[in-house]
Length: 205
Image (cartoon, rainbow, N blue to C red):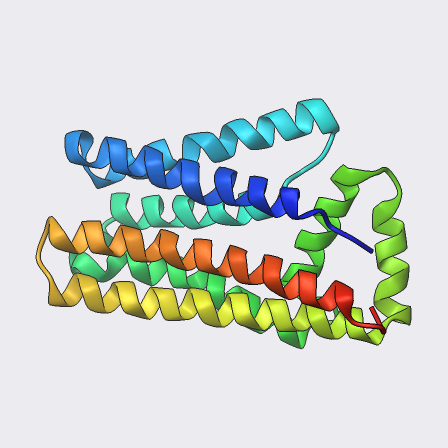
C-alpha cells in the first residue's frame, strides 16, 4: 500500500505554502481577518477543483479550512473581546485535540486522511485500505502513531503561539505566531513523508 510522496508534496503546497503566502501578502495591508480569509482561498479553490475534476473530497484541506473558519468565527464574535490576543491560537488547538481524542476511536483521524488520499489515486483503493486496516496490524499502528504525532504537534504549536501572543506585542506577535504555525505544519508534513518511507521499508509492511 503506497501513497506517493508527490501527494504529500502537493498537500504541503496546497495546505501550508499557499495559505501562508496568501496570509503574509494580505496581513500588512488589510489586517488579520482579511488575511485569514485570503489564506482560505487556496484551500477552497483546491477542494472545488478536486470535487469537479476527481469527484473526491480532500479531508486534509477540509481540516485546515475548518481551523481557519473557527478562528474567523471567534475573531468576529463577542468572545474576541475577552479572549484578547490569545483568541486565535486557542481556537487552532482544537484540531490537535481532535487528533488526540480520535485515538480512542476504532479508526483515528489519520486513517480517514490516508483513505481520502488513496481514493483519489485509483477507484477502489480505499476498499483495499479498509481490508488491510483489519489484516495488517503494523499498518494500524503506523496510522495511530501518525495521529498521535500530528495531535501532539498541533497542540504544541497552539501552546507556543499562545505564549507568543501573550508575551509579545503587535506586530511581532502576529508575525511570529503565523510563522510558528506554518513551520510546525511543514515539519509535520516532512516527518510524515520520512515516517511513511521508513514504514514501507519494513519487512512486515
